[in-house]
Image 1 (cartoon, rainbow, N blue to C red):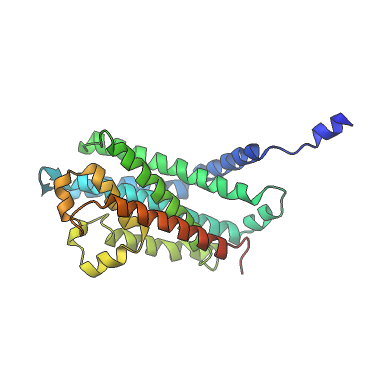
Image 2 (tube, helix red, strand yellow; image 1 turned 90 degrees about the horizontal axis):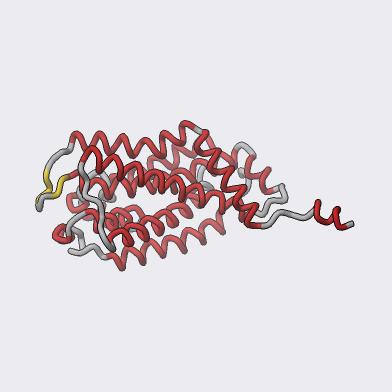
Length: 269
């Protein structure tokens, strides 16, 4: 009787979470398209823009130094919002989510696995971008407490974009239309949020629209750790507004969670 009980004992929740997280990571890195689009695209953009737009912004700051903050923010957006929205829509369309929902696995394990995947891919993207920036473009890295700011901006931004990506996945009619639905939206945000251009040069109405979404605040928070304080005067409020950055990203985390709870589906309509 004792042997039977031991043999039928269910695995612990922590074990299930670890197992699901491992599956998510393996599935991601086995998909060449996902790896190229999520990890290598920001690297290619850094190389191209760094080589073409090699000029001084003033105060001894190169455009590449300015661009580093934006491209890291865009990399986080790709690893979280785009990655989640497209992959989950595809898994919903091909029946993977319906199958998982019908297994004994706790549904929370699915979301834990996705979060772990996002954090791992985000970290990999940041490390690769920083390495290339330092080696090829002599980017000045943050120092001291700036690393703490870097960390909380990246974590809050990734969290907000992950939740928003999960919610957006329900908008796509099926997996085939997910990329066409999500990618233009992500590109639009990148162009108006200070990724490819100086945010101060973007028309004010576009700045206002960009301020409604997390990417603008992520890029602004990251600029505070890569740029000297003298350039804070070029921001719309004349400062880095780190308190507001934390507030807006926090609000998006709460709003994204609410949207996920209300809109997430385990199968297509």
